[in-house]
Length: 222
Image (cartoon, rainbow, N blue to C red; front, side, top):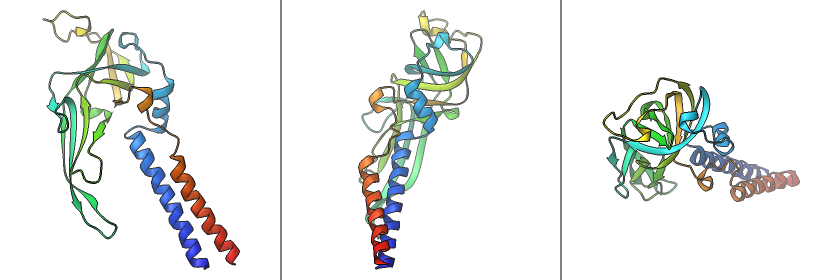
């Protein structure tokens, strides 16, 4: 009895660890746990008031060049498509990645005070995802034109520049800041969709209880 009990406890422990890993991978995406906490705690800074250092900016995506998304056919400034095949395996159906497409175009994030340029190839984009279920052969990661996003980034002061000289609008002038390093851009601008750092209680408790029962059974069997 000792061997099977220990094996069961190990399997339950591994299952719990994998559940946690998958939970945080889905919740955090390209961001760190520290950045996830900052998204909740930091106050947004108007673009025109941003100074050198770490800032949180809430604004609208504006793109001059866009791509049509696979799902819903909405214009996107950044789009990634992963193509899968569903194959049978000893553990049941599995999705196998066949190829990936990336379509990234420079865009602006603007609020009522100004705008800041974003190079998507130099940023970490937390995309909205669709088609992640097992049956889907195309998984889409998108950042929509016109979407409200949060930018969490180090910035530095730069000279203001007229973006569209022939257009008369308050936000035609860049605010005089530049993003430094790998800025985080996330579509999760509303509190209810911000990353959750608390683990999925039900799954963790079940795995922990299974592991504890297995270990206890092994001890009692000695």
